[in-house]
Length: 123
Ligand SMILES: CC(=O)N1C(=O)N[C@@H]2[C@H](CCCCC(=O)O)SC[C@@H]21
Image (cartoon, rainbow, N blue to C red; front, side, top):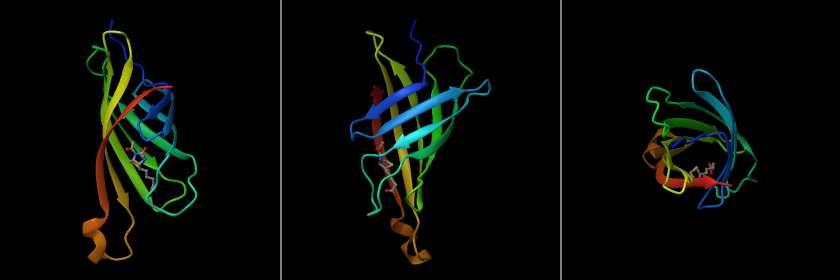
């Protein structure tokens, strides 16, 4: 049966690594994220993530969302997506994200948010 489990180690096509630890009974999970790329000139550091897994349907390919609170940068990213299992049992996380960077003033708010898609596969 197609069962996709979020727990474990994931990598995306940018080379960023993500580890998702325990998912509790409410679908709440935490983990860590080590991005391979950054919009800052700061030294990249491991950053914490917190998220929620949708538990309603029992078809095994749940939707989810999580937030990465960058430990080395004045920004934050929210991801949302779904965990899929293909015919060979290979799991992928299809995601979209919004990266909000801190701006010094309101006039620059227009350029503060980046958006993208990304696919994670199990390490
Ligand atoms: C999955 C994916 O596409 N991304 C990934 O793995 N790293 C980049 C961004 C990293 C932002 C770091 C903090 C900063 O530069 O302010 S979040 C979306 C994108």
